[in-house]
Image (tube, rainbow, N blue to C red; front, side, top):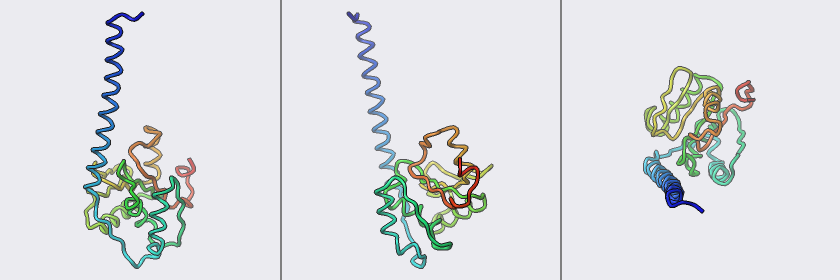
Length: 179
């Protein structure tokens, strides 16, 4: 038989756990709402070939956990797919991460996406390369080298900061991508 004191502590433990779970649920709902009202206005250049498949891509990203997209060089995959992921409802529970094989590509892509959104780097779009992190807490997009993502996976194997991860230039095999 349980003493009154043990029963009280046992009940308190359940109440505290329930309270913590409820607090986390409320926090996540509020964070999702806050991110939703801060969504950047998406705009797409019409001249890119990928725009012909925009609706299909948005539907596939919204419906499936893994989507493989291939296209010719210069078709707009690198700069438009992160925005299509946001349009599909991704990025509200975490960042939309996009890897690039080289540092210069990561910063250039981030600047290009920010320019297309009519923003500066550091609002909705950030990037992280070795020795430089320009990703604010308010960011929806984080462009980074594949080595940075691998480093983050070592400290957080579930990559909880991310809602979506895009591995760009996956055909350029490296130890980082193969890992």
